[in-house]
Image (cartoon, rainbow, N blue to C red):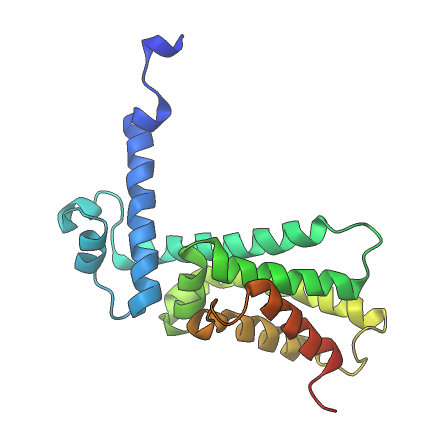
Length: 207
């Protein structure tokens, strides 16, 4: 059928519903980032989204349902950004170069990409265990990717052979996620921060 026989997807009920869901999720992510999960209410989300609280139940059954989707989008955004950045490197890139690029991409995703990523970083540790378990596989897959990067650098002799990779990855990814709480773009760029983090890892801070 021609375009004149129907309505555009964005104007169809399904298209409008998807846009409304996205609007709610962005409002919720912004509030989760500002106030945290526990302090944010459905009424807060409705007010930020400029809609009635009752209307939200048509799209989401509960605050937990909104949170789960925000978390899914947040970790997926970070994961995709890091993998794409590393994949875009030349084939001859060393494991250390791949790790440096992953650090840069993670920090850029957290600090520059969207409301979803800093919301994910801030609230993950505040979550009820039931929600953490639901999100757990996505987070584990992301940490597994980092372990592969660090192990490759270790096998190449570019990081210490006695480095406890499992603990190091938890430390590194956790430390980068906390940058959403203190990073000030007036003091340094995200790329500069990424270079420093990589320098601290590979060269240390001692004399």
